[in-house]
Image 1: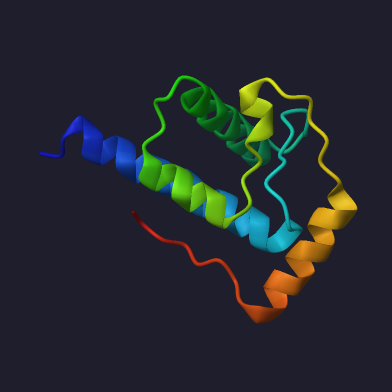
Image 2 (image 1 turned 180 degrees about the vertical axis):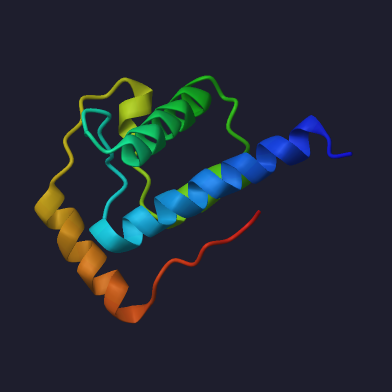
Length: 107
């Protein structure tokens, strides 16, 4: 029987892999809950949960490192006003994408 931690890790990694695919396709992780797409909306809720965990010092460092690899946007979780420049992010994404893709990874 799997422990609660193992189950939570599996669920977290599944969402992380979906976010990685979203990043590889779109070049950013700025997902809004206002979408009509249920799957993207669910992923947006998970992204919000990662912000909450970071804000409350509950996000393990290894998870933060994984999210950092896909340019996860953290300033929103620190109470700062969001100032993302999507054109700049897209340029960075295009340069990174030419060289390599972020792989789906577990832990």
